[in-house]
Image 1: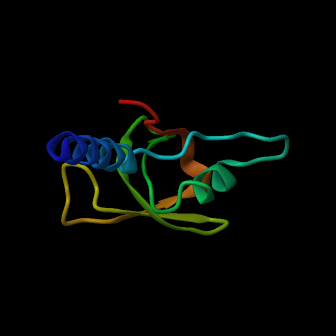
Image 2 (image 1 turned 180 degrees about the vertical axis):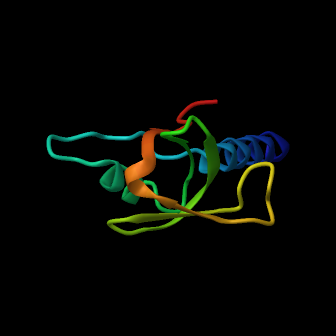
Length: 97
């Protein structure tokens, strides 16, 4: 019985941990901007598609009216990026496994 409870607790922790890496599902309201959507994702991992077609994936650190700071870029983990918010065409958020 004790072993079953321990296994159940460990399984629940594992599931919670895997969900922690996903961003919150984006909620878009009238009048929202790319910047507002990004502000809602601070601390979460997102992919942004830029006007020139490039995609950058990383953790949203800071969002200002004009700039986005992405940390720990995927494929370039030792690098961060600062992106002009006006050049972002899409914000892609992983919400499910």
